[in-house]
Length: 178
Image (cartoon, rainbow, N blue to C red; front, side, top):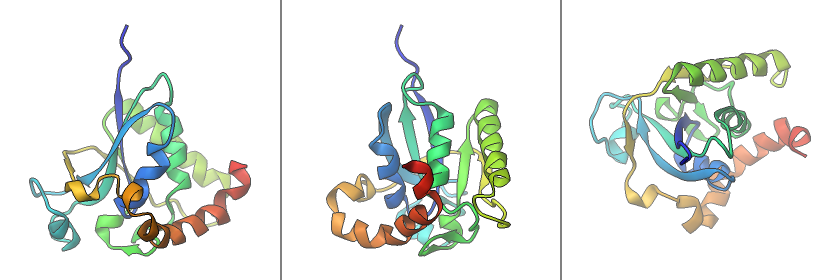
């Protein structure tokens, strides 16, 4: 029996920074950068950056649920985003960088909502509320090819781009991931 491939869509700031944490995991088939949640068909990067399309930069992840679960992906998502910042992520500001878990089934919604509630109850972020939205998935438009796998080909730029995110991860998760 062939494995069923599932997908997950997450937004958490610049999509360049969201690919590598998932792309390198066992069970991940592919990760693509793109745009979702807006009202313009086939948006371009320039259109999305203009804040006029309603789109959010996101990643779509194709995965083998026999090797990695959706729940596992959601747990990783929390560790690579700031779930207390609705105005963007790290140095990336604006609605196109907001943190969102886009769900495509009742099961994904239940997993994401439970995980969000568990995170809020954990006290990891003190009194700061968890503001990451959980929304129904809509059309995912792949970004231009030069955005795909950016971290592999532009390591110097990624080091600068990802520094605030790395500092945040160390501050909030270092003791939990060792």
